[in-house]
Length: 128
Image (cartoon, rainbow, N blue to C red; front, side, top):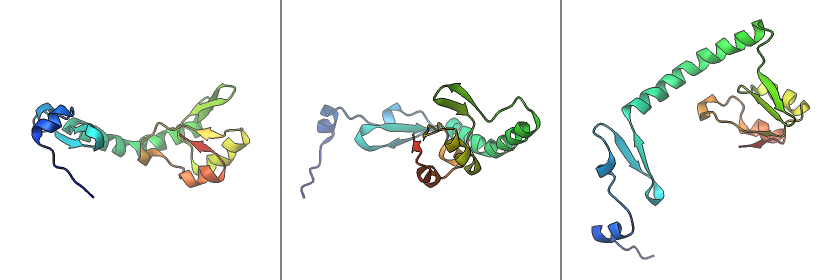
């Protein structure tokens, strides 16, 4: 195995740049593989904490609302092959299979997914 150490000039020629030059005070930058940089700000961190703290109270509110209001549905058919709705519960998966669902596209954060991917795979759902 051969490891070559590059000088600062050679790195600049390859198009890589210093992370510290592009980060504001108080922010933290993480250099990810292939030169991608993720900047973590204090505001972004607080929004993430707030979102996690509010997820379960709003979920409970919507479940109660679904039970009390007849016009509130957990999901709706928006096209022949598309259902659009809230996050499914594990108990909803067999019903979704009966409706002909064969795939699930989720735009949720990992902590918001209530159905384990193994249950989707058992029911032969594709997960995106």
